[in-house]
Image (cartoon, rainbow, N blue to C red; front, top):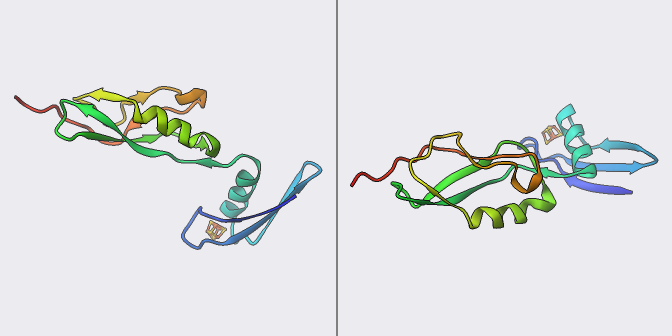
Length: 121
Ligand code: SF4
């Protein structure tokens, strides 16, 4: 089977054509090794980085930015976002603090991408 992708590993946006079958995968159109690896990954199991926000109680802002500490299968992104939409954390939060451990059994943690102080009363 042949699939076409746009490489998103850098801003050059090369057009990749990935041919698979018989246990072999070949990539055309890539200009570098990163493009080859991206093509193989997109063909076999597309992964995406996830960034979002979660609600915060008692913080100086109402939302806390969060990021996945690894790639998440593309077909689980919306499910992961639905988990994050239901979460509310309590300030203070430290950057890098784990907000969701092993989200949806992906082996990936969702961590705070900034610190959030509590509101001083
Ligand atoms: S193949 Fe290489 S040069 Fe082309 S977009 Fe991908 S990373 Fe960039």
